[in-house]
Amino acid sequence: MTELLRILLITGEKSHDEIRQIATKTNTQKELALQCDVIKAPVDVSAFIQPKHVISLCSGFSKGDYNFILLPGFTTWDTHEIAEQIAIPVFKGTRFSGDLFDLLANIRDIELPTKKAADYLLRNRSQQKIDKHIELLTKIYSTKGQLKTGPRVLTFTSPSGEIILTGGKFPPLLIAEIVDCPKYSEEEILEKTRYFINSGAQVIDLGMIFGQSHPDLIRRVVPLIKKNHDVLISVDSIKIEEIIAGIESGADLILSIDGENINEFLQYTQRVHVNRNLGLVLIPLEGSSHKAITNPEKKAEFLISLAKRLKSNGFTNIMYDALLKSPISPGMMDSLYAYQVLNKKLQTESEFHYPTFIGLHNVFELVDADTSGMITLLSLIAQELDCAGVFTTEFSPKTLGSIRETKRSIDLAYLSKISKSPPTNMGLDGFTVKSKRKSLSRTEAASQEVDLSTNTIPEGILQNLIERDYEFIHDSTGYFKFYVDHSTRLIEALFIPFDSTKERLGLKGKLLLKGKTAESIYQAINKLELVKEVSHAFYVGKELSKAEYSLSINAAYFEDTDLD
Image 1 (cartoon, rainbow, N blue to C red):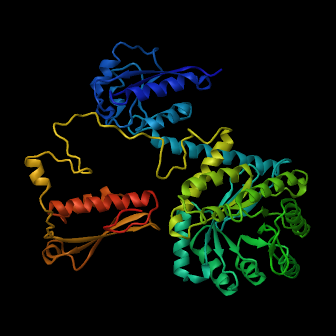
Image 2 (image 1 turned 45 degrees about the vertical axis):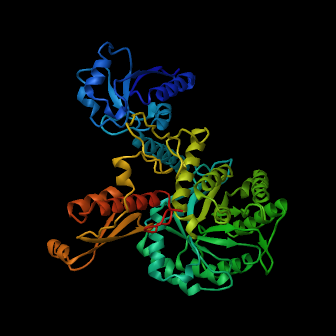
Image 3 (image 1 turned 60 degrees about the vertical axis):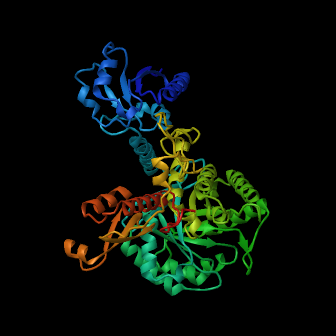
C-alpha cells in the first residue's frame, strides 16, 4: 500500500480558491495517496510571497506534520534559504495553477526543486519515463528477440550505426516528407532536412513527383543527406526506376510497394544483392494504373498477400499502409475502418503480423483548421492502431510547425500507452495556442477608467491628451525591419542605421540582430541605444512580441499587419 504523503500548499489571496479546489480534487483521488492542505499568505499575488511569510505561517508546525511544503513556482528566491529555520522541507511547485494537479499526480517521480519552478521538470520527467521504457524494452528485445504476440518489431540502422527499433511495443518512427523534392536545389534539400530533424523527424522522406521520374536526383541526394546528417532516409515513389535508385544509393525505406511494381522489384532483387533489412511500406494499389482497392476485407487480404511474397524472398522489415483518406470526400471513417479490419485479420496471420503505417497529412493538409488538435488526435489513433510509421508533411503555410506538433503528439500518445491511462495530466500535451491555464483576473481598483474599445474617455486632462492627433516622429538613430525565420526558430531585427549611429557603433551598413525571444533582442537594442524616441520603442516592442508569438503558434508574420 502506498504511503500517504501530507503536503502543505502555500498561496496568495488571488489564487487561494483555485488552489483549494485543486487540493480537494487531489485528496479525493485515493489512488494518489495524498493529503494536501492549503494556507493563505498575506499577499495578493503568489509571486510576492517572501521567506518571512513562510517562516511566520509555518512557525507552529513540526517535522511530522507534513512531508514537505510547496510554494508557487513564481517565487523568485531559493527555498533552500529557509531550510534551517523550518523543520519541514520547502520546495517550489508550478508557476501556473493549471499545472499543479499534473505535478501532484506525478509527485513521487519528481525530484522537487528549490530554485526553479517544478513545471519545467514535468516535461523532462515525462521524456525520461519514455526513454527509460524504451531502454528496458531494447534490453528485453536484444536478449529474447521477437515477442510471440502483437506486431513484429522492425530494425533499422542509422548512418552512425545506431540501432533503431519500431513496431511491437516500441514507439512509431516519425517520417517527414520533403514534398516535390525534385523541385529543390541540393542546398535547399539539406536545409529542409536540417529543419525537419530539429523538429523531431527520424526519417527524411524524399517525395517524388507523380508522372515524372528523377532517379539521378535520388542517387545524388541520398548520399548527400547521409554525409551531412545522421538520419534514416526513405524514397516515396511507385516507379521502379526511382525505387532502384533509392536502393542503390543507400535509402533505408521504400514507399511504396504495390501490386504492380512488386514483380519488377523482386526480379531486381534476384539479379542484384539487396539488403534484406530494407524497410518496405506496402500500399493497396493494383494493376498498371495503380488502382486503389477500396473494400476493407479485400484490402487487408491484398496487403498480406504482398507481404507473403516479400517474406518468401527474405524481406521482413515491412509495414502495411491501409491509406488514410481525407474527411467527407472521399471519407476518413471508411479508411479508419480498413485499418481495424486489417489489424483484426493480422491476429490470425501471426507469421505476417507486421505493423501498420499511417499518413496523417491526408487529413490535416486537406482541412482548413488548426493542425495541432487534429495531429494530436490522429497520433493517438495511430498508437491504438499499433503503427510503426507515422508519416507527415509540412508543406502549405497552414501546416507550419506540423512536424514539431507530430513529434510532441507521438510522445504524448506513447506515454499514455505505457502509463495505461488517458492522455491527460501527464506532463506532456498537444496544446499550441490554448492551454489548461486560466488568465489572472485584475483585483486592483482604479480611480478612473478609460475604455478605448468604446471610446469612453472622461472629460479633462486625460481626454485632451488621448484625443490629440498622433504624430509619428522618426528616430534619430535609424529604423528597423522585422522578420521571423521558422526554419531556425529565430526572430530577426534588421536595423538600418543613420550615419551618426554608424559612426558611433563602427558599422559599415545594416545590423542584423537574431534571437529566440523578444526580450533577448530588445535588451540588445537597449544596450546599443538603437531607440531614442518613446513612440519608436513602443513600435519595436509591439513587433517583437508579435514576432515571438507567431513563432510560438507557427503563424505567418508580416510587419505592420495583424496575425491571422
